Image 1 (cartoon, rainbow, N blue to C red):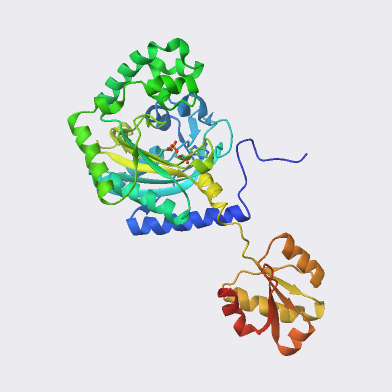
Image 2 (tube, rainbow, N blue to C red):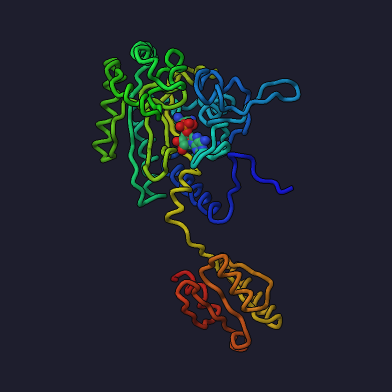
Length: 412
Ligand code: HAM
């Protein structure tokens, strides 16, 4: 029996693990610059932590959580997202004494969704949260961070930032009622999926992908018309700051996000290069979530990005294997070859030792794995205490002293 990864899960290796590590490195760099502190939380938490805050009518809670009973009958859930565990951890460890508290984390999330391109049941998220500030600049700072991250990791990507405000809780509840009333008029025409949500969760119908639903929604009341003066001012302030700092965005009143805890600013970074699962980063502000989880009544704002989706977009740019292979053409030169190997690895140059002692076999391995360089060691090289380096892409080769090897590789 040959085991395969469980449906919706995947192994990360080869080029993908390089991409994954590049993303992690970039995130750590940006987090240091913007002063967010890293936190790692357990992969499972008590089920309660998620069910109420994410919304008992949200798809995540209704259909997607991996929930199981522990041997002592406690209900546990593999984390479907990072915001609630981070708040739990900030409260458990007394990190909210000094505000604002800025945290970030990278790790696996679990949702039992229907797998498709860019949608997995176990996937990795980058997550940034800022707890304890209602300042519009906190929203802008996070948007700026996300924008900078995408631009630096995917410099050629065409992407768009969409922005909306959901107002405060009361406004949102008022809006939901109005929306339900409007949608009830079209009940017969709506998709089966949307029909179920008219009363319980009408705002989720706003991002339905069904063509008929979309037509009905296009004439639905927009949340912007319901915003209080304060909420509207806050939204305008954020838009003005973004404009002043040249961060391009588009207002999208149907943008509501999939989890229930949001209010005021919500945003998504999307690209057409991903297919249907087109959101790279999504986030927003949440009031009342920290207090719901047992903390003080403080606000928060944050976002999460899907690592696998970013990796899919990197694929187009990062497809070269920069490996250097060593080809020792006879066992007689093994020890000299090992000297070169040691010299390179001591100098932090990654190199692959294949134990073959045969040029033809070595070249075949290097070609199969699309290595960039091969360092050849034979009689001539051994006698002259040199080595030959061949660029496998251009075919160019030269014989060098070991001391020249590093510069030659670095400048290639
Ligand atoms: P979310 O929109 O559910 O938000 O997920 C954020 C990102 O995670 C998505 O935009 C997508 O890139 C990625 N993602 C989500 N589900 C999957 C999946 N099944 N497979 C692959 N990638 C996926 C949140 O999780 C919120 N906690 C974000 C947040 C943080 N809001 C405030 N702070």
